[in-house]
Length: 307
Image 1 (cartoon, rainbow, N blue to C red):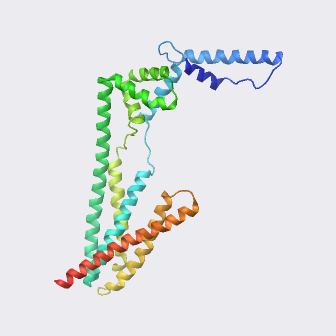
Image 2: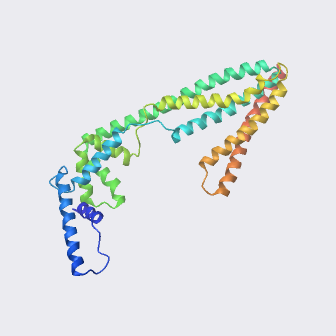
């Protein structure tokens, strides 16, 4: 009955001051009309144990079913943005280091051939790795759903205890928790969905997630890795050092911009702090990419000199 009181609190307005007899009479008439309308509405709702709280349970039921059967539409998600960042970060670091290292051999043809081979292999590897990781996440969700369904069917008492644990922090009293748990148990699918959302706090992954993840990471890697290769297409066969310096200049600028804007997207709203953090993020990306390239150049130069 506490749910009815809550509903009445939302439907009825409290008097804000003393009223005349005429005002009180008019208020009584309006209240009676509202009561009749509300009673009619509650009467038309599906009954649960002949209690007028069926309206609340019906809303809960319909919203859970709507959440389960909602048609997903495509839009960029934080996970897709994260996948793109992963692909771009690796693509701008690894091929840059490789092309810088191969430049020690003195031939743009070797740099281009080796860079393109690494670019294709890395794109496929990163894309497949991302797809497999997303598929493993989806398989883990399905396994959790299966375990939860087994728990609901074989141990309803434990499922009811979970409902109590999730509702207790919100100040829902025991009678209401019992009523909601009993209602959810009437449909195992609803109970499973409730436990997955509010206890395990997991949402069903998009079925297209593995493909989208693999494609996003792979394309991000290819796009990022193509940038340091561009200068080598534009110079002569033996102008590898010129292409190297142009590539270094382009990558320093690109890495800084990438680190800057990546940090801006994740930084706090304080403009002064976020700007400083973005600058530091850009310098970190330059340091990582430059360090990797320097190590690659040193290793290749050392091996080439000793052979």
